[in-house]
Image (cartoon, rainbow, N blue to C red; front, side, top):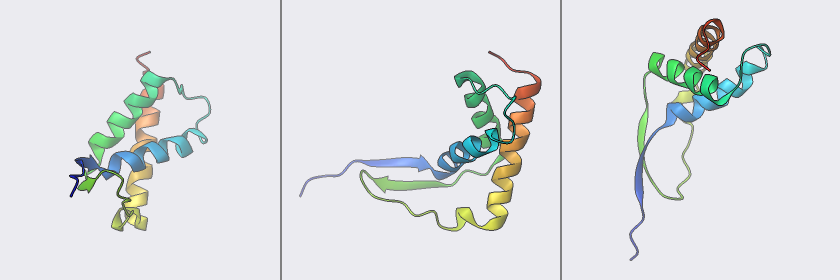
Length: 92
């Protein structure tokens, strides 16, 4: 039986990247360069509780309770706060 690769993943990171794309639509004047976008992601992730899962390569994950309305609100607040912080003082 072939061995599958197993990896550890913070599922919150995936959701933060999705929320950043959507949040930038509300802040078109915010810089969206690679450095600023990664700064936004780092700041938002530092404000959110991580949710680590162990997965086998190729396995599809489910978005379980992470997408409950309160968690979505927390993600939105963290990303918006991060965009405004980076917008006020970009490092690029």
